[in-house]
Image (cartoon, rainbow, N blue to C red; front, side, top):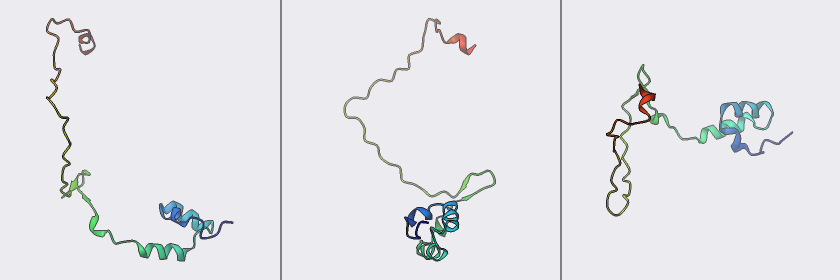
Length: 93
């Protein structure tokens, strides 16, 4: 049987792991309670959702500025076949 100090940090990840560790005596309830008391209160970090599952008042996030490739902008190839001889047309009709 493993001792109660056998990598207890792994038991705090998930409620199922906590329950299994408690059942297998790899973690004591007192150790779990002591760890739980050290966790910060994150009640202010909740996100509310409406009935359709959309977030209500989501936090504003600052967009990252992506660096641009130096030099001239490459042309975009948006050429369409003009002769009507597109082999993929059959698949769309």
